[in-house]
Amino acid sequence: MAENTAPALLRFGLPLGVFLALVVLLAIGLGLNPREVPSPLINKAAPAFELPQLHAPERTFSPQSMAGQVWILNVWASWCVACREEHPVLTDLAKRGVAPLLGLNYKDKRDDAITWLQRFGDPYRLSVSDINGKVGIDYGVYGVPETYVIDKQGVIRYKRIGPVTPEILQQKILPLVKELNGNA
Image (cartoon, rainbow, N blue to C red):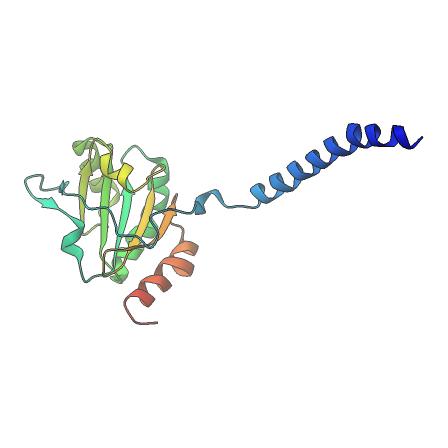
């Protein structure tokens, strides 16, 4: 009888063990927040770029001009439904004046972007046009909207995938900006 126990254990025990391991991994995966995908850019220098300003395309902007300031970069587009959802939160953030809010208009037509801002309001100190999406790729953009908090040394300290909600603003972004500005 002992001879039959080993094949039965392999036949039933191994598949059961594999099944249980998959259930555990699935349970862990379902508990994760897809909006908080860890970015390899956190605590690394923000990628350099130079892009034309949306409202003044003859002028350019580069992150180096923000050296010495904590600032927020929001990736948005006129075709983005979720950008419309987060827009009132960004407007509130801009009114608070805690940090400059800059926009990276992603894979959008300039006229569409300007019309969108005229319709819903423009919370940005300025927006730049990333028409071909190259800068978005450098920043690891998964999709719009995305928001980055960048410190005084030009290092990315926070990345939000998806709309900024009032809760995210209150619980994560504002305390981090305060801390980075030395007001903790």
